[in-house]
Image (cartoon, rainbow, N blue to C red; front, top):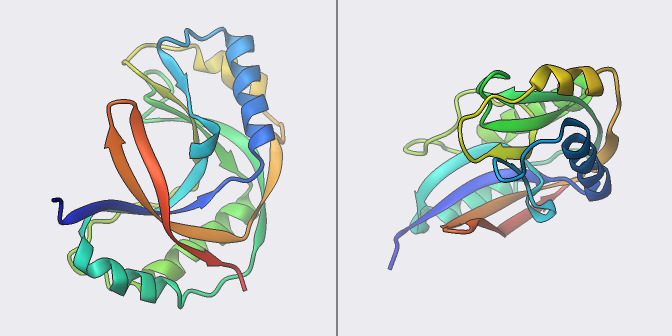
Length: 188
């Protein structure tokens, strides 16, 4: 029996239609090989606010109690940029970013969550950069990212309302991760 749980804090996207439409537009316009570039499934569209990693089951109750004290107001975001990690020449992830106001509000929420948690002994991401993963590359290959950037620049791809965050459990399987919500905190 495992004593640890792989966890993270995230906000789910609700405008699934716009994100799926964008995925289809990108794959048809750029003609990526879908054996190499894998679209993220719609039930996995989320913004990771804080990756906690493997945490001991004994401290989950303490974390949930602290997360329930987080207060925030719902906010709107606009999906408006396309980017890649670690870089556009040999990306492993293609992501969509959000407008500056939405980014600021999401980063403020991240700081509020961090202030409520006693992170002693917990691993956290070093820098929070709001993004939602659209595609993962199964292997390191060059893709024509400049064509994608030219096709997608100066556009709004959709909007969303962010009104809750979740403490999520991530079970890694050979088919990919399976996410489940352990806790949901709603905007006030």
